[in-house]
Each structure stands twice: as C-alpha cells, then as structure tokens.
Image (cartoon, rainbow, N blue to C red; front, side):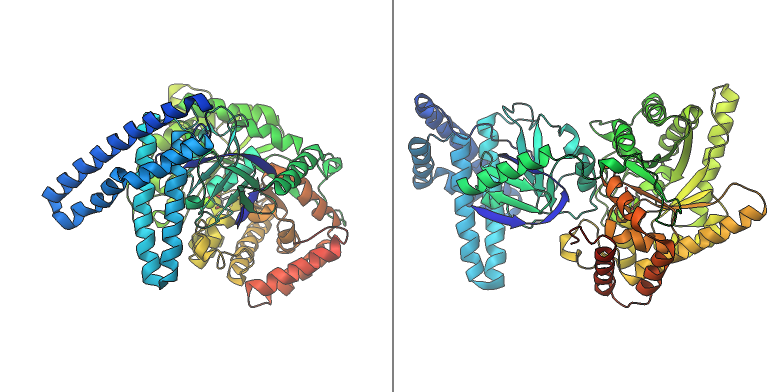
Length: 600
Ligand code: PEP
Ligand code: MG
C-alpha cells in the first residue's frame, strides 16, 4: 500500500480499479482470468512479445541506417529485453501463479523493474537518477507497445470497460475528460496540474473526486490495481490494505449520505450581516450545469466557459450548436437572471488542437490563445458572436471577452460585434441589438489600464486564475511553482484593488449621467474559497462568481460578514508584505467569524 499526496481539486471519495492512461490511452481491461484461460494467456503473451520484438528489431535496423549505431542501439535494449528468456519466464510465472491476465502480468513485471531501476538510480545521485529515469521511460514505452499488441491497438480507452474505473494519468487535457461520466469514471488523479487547471475545474463541475499535482507515481501502479482517491484530503492510495479499504468504504458511504451542509441557505438572500447585497453567480462549463446554479441558489451565471463546446468534437461547433447551448442555459435561468457568455477561450491548455491554433508554440500561455486566436480566425469568432446575439432574445444575456491585454484588442472585439449586428440586420435574422458587453481582467496590463478599459465596456470580471499566473510568472498548472502561485500575494491584491477602484470610479461617473451601473465581478477560483470572501468584499466587490457547488459555503460567509469589518480586513491585508502573512491573517479572521467550523 502506498499513499501519494497531491492537490485535492474536487471532493469526495472513490474506490475502484485503476485505468492508467498514458499518451496512447492504453487500458488493461482485466486483472485476472479464470484458471482454464491461463495457458491461452501464455500463448497470447508469446505472440505479443514476438510481434513487439520484431517491430523493435525493424526500428533498430532503420535507425542504425539513418542515424548510426549509437542511436540505433536505443532500440537494442528494448529488443533484447523482449527476447530475454528470463523476462519471459518471469511474466509467464506471474500468469501461472496468480492467474493474471497477460496484460496485467506484463505491466506488473515491467513496472516492478522500472521501480527497481529508479531506486537504484537515486542511490547514485543526480546523474544516476537522471539516467535511470531516461531508461525507465524506454521501458514504459516498451510496456505500452506490448499492451497495444495484446489489446489489438485499442483507440477508445473507455470502449470495453466492464466496470467504472479510477483514471490515473500524467496529465489530462480537457478533451480527455470528454468521456468521463458516472458510469465510466469514478475519479481521477494526475501527476501534474494545479488547482486551477482546466481539468481540475471540470472535475469540480462534474462533481468527480480528483487529485492533481501528485508528482511521479505512474510507474508504481498498473492498470487494474485497486486505488482510492480522496479529493477532500488530496490523497491517492495505491493497493490499499483491507483495513484502509474498509475505512474509506465507510467514509465514502458517509459522504454520499450527508445532505448538503448549507442547503437550508439556498433560498435565503445573499446579504451581509449589515444587509449589503452580494450577488452570487455560478461558473459553468456545460449547458447542463445551468440547473446546478439554480439548485445551489445562484442568482445567475457569471461565467459560461463556452470553449467546452469543443468537448468530444474534432471540428468547430456550428452556429446552431452555439445557439442551442446558449438558448438552453437562458431558458433554464429564466428572463431575469443574468447569464454571462464568455467568448471562446481556446488555446494554451484548453483544446489547443483546434484548427486555427498554432501547433508546437514554445510558450502557449503567452501565445496565440483566447481572444488573440479568435481575432485571427474571424469566421470562427463571428459564428459564435452571431449565435450569442440571436440567443440574447431569450433572456438577460451578457457577452464577455477573455484575455484582453490591450485597449486596441478590446476595441477590435467590439467592432466585430457591431459588424455581426449589421450582418444579422441585413439578413433579416432576429437578434437583440443592445447586449451588455464586458471584458475579463486577467492579464496585468489590463488591470493597469482598467480605468481606460472601463470606458469601453459595461462590466469587468476579474479572472484571478490567469491574473495570478501572469502577475507572478508562475504557470497555474505547474506544481513546481505552486508555492509562487498564490491568490494572497500582495501584488495580486494591489491589482485587484486597482481594478475595483477603476470600476467604482466609472460607476460614479455613469450614475451622474443616469446610465446603467458599471459592475465588477470576480470569476476566478478565488471567489469559491470562503477564506478570501471577507477580503474580496472588503476590497469593494459586490458580485462573485464561483463553481455552483461552492455557492452555499460562500453565502454562509457573506451572511456572517459586516462590510466595515471586511474593509478593515482588506486594509490590513494590503499593508502586509508577503502572501503567507496575508493567508495566515485571513485564516485567523475566518476562524473568528465562523468559530464553529474547521478552517484549514
Ligand atoms: C480565470 O482566468 O480566472 C478564469 C476565470 O478563466 P479560466 O479559468 O477559464 O482561464
Ligand atoms: Mg482565464
């Protein structure tokens, strides 16, 4: 049994057989076979090893001709392992002794070998460890080839599941999670990733327990091993013993039976203890989640991440597909609740394989992503804008542009929106011409220019997930810099304050002119953490948008707060010099306002 710790990004406990997904998504369907099938498994094994060895021999010969014997010999190690009688005997004896399927026996033997190799390498210092890792990768590659030969090169890893699995992977792209559902996937755990990675966000939305950023563990587990994921504790347990299994079975049952702790607050108003309204909105990725917003007492949708329309699709969604998704969300929310539709935020870690994106960018988070990509793919952008304006007839729709980094960029987006209106008008297609327009503030340049940007739009939404990563130059998905990626960093707080101040000033100006108020929202994950709520309210925010599941907890904090007290919290925090000072100060404060609850 092994415990591995990471970042819990979606709570809950799941127990099940592991499905280890590597880059080719190889699945081991059965761990054991019936005794009468054992000899058949040994024959299958022999064929698969022969086939893979022949392929390695061919690769070696080709590479030797092309690049010389030194590089050709990379394949020699794989070939000789495949042809090695001792290795074959070891795998065969695992099949005979333990009724393992050929796939499981191959995986077990190779993974044990890799683990021994890595342990040995570590004892030799940095150089030894690096060399061992390199060799280990070759053997993992070998395992994949043998499994592919055994399984007939499967394409859909979920195609022949006999029971729901726990997915284990180095990393998952949002599109990998497309087939995740309660009947196929109970939970997942990944080696990389942070708590604002898109896979993490989607796990939260789908309410699947998940742990990310665990560091290397895939070499210690084989498909079919029993594993436990506890998303609340942020732990993955490989091969649990019976006591542990029983303890987590019990915890799982307890969590499933527990009613939502704050369900009773659902229909209570979201106001502070001194009766200042704080509007709570939901973030959604899929149109079906609109109903979750209502279930959890949200006042509307503050962020609809429309790029998830690309789930399960290899081509661009059509205008009708966009229109149907937006109309369905608006119908669910009714005529009086706002729905903020964010235009496509593709690229970097989100659906970066869509056409129009640049393959192999060296620095995709600083590259052609999001609105930059849309402005280079006008047809793609206009298709979405047309659908948005048409759907706006069905409710209180607002449109928002992501990743704006300059005033010019925002103006270009608005120009395109106007062009689309003209096209629709000209074609006689019904649409709503007056739709509030907003911009996300998630790049430091936009925060710095907030006073100018405010004149261009009707609202801001601060995307703290990206704002933190760009302010601190710390990738939001990279566990190695997770210590820098901190919502309470004073630099982040100063930027948020700057944006809120610009919004308040613009609001005052508009009030004098009797115009519609200017609104500022926060829609990053920061809004979903009780710890940060007093600070955000104290900084002047009156609107927060979070994963629907988090809304009752947030409302609970809001209802205990007094604005003057929250303002003092913000002043104190802004006077501090480090993120850790601010975090521990906020924890102490939350303990004071919620004395009966565990604050971690
Ligand atoms: C953000 O960056 O804070 C945000 C809400 O957008 P996303 O997480 O989709 O990048
Ligand atoms: Mg963002």
